[in-house]
Length: 188
Image (cartoon, rainbow, N blue to C red; front, top):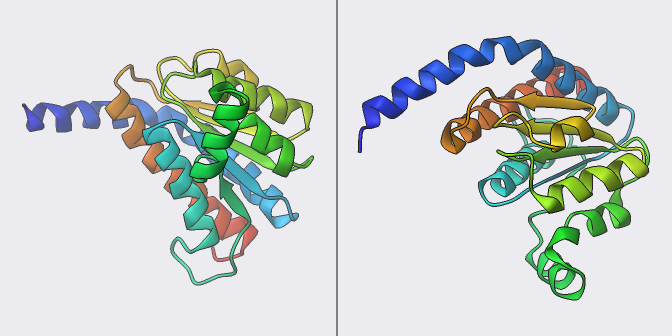
């Protein structure tokens, strides 16, 4: 265990991520504009990325920095009964795409979190979101995988280390929330 090494690795990753700021802001503005126009955000991911999806959704429906109206956001990875029902009756590959069929409307936003961009259930969700005319935003890593090409906005953390990628995804969530609160809610 070398915690100082881990912190140094995070610092190096953060330095490489300065180049992502314009893309993060562009995606954040797109989310904010859609929310301001009445669309909802649907988010998903697997494992730690599912926690990121839940983090984004709860900050929108609850609060981030300001006391403001609740904003429409759902984490598709949060409902254990839906996940196990769909996984059992259909397949694990369908756990997010089936929910998108139920809840996703044209103009809504799908935000996916994936450290590899290769998970079959994420890829299927992105394809269904495209068919249903949702804006598709990905917080990715490890080059972005096949998910990169399926996203309208792909933010690819320049790292192969899952821990570093997820740490930067946490920053991306907060950056997007800053955009939402400044643009969609008007709390600049």
